[in-house]
Amino acid sequence: MKSKRIPTPRLAKFFGMSDKFWINLQNDLEIRKQKEKLKEKLQSIQPLQQTG
Image (cartoon, rainbow, N blue to C red; front, side, top):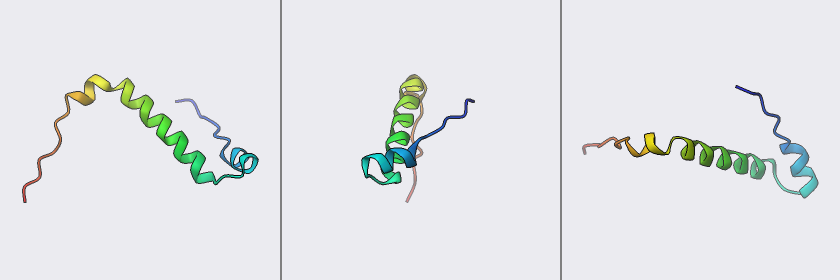
């Protein structure tokens, strides 16, 4: 696994935005990539049925 440098503090400072904004943006991108990569496998997963 490659280590990635996330320039969150620098971007936040430059654009005058919060660190959390950039972290959330990066997390969203990573989740989208993983969902696309695992698309077929995810379709075959059945959600857990909870009984009440």
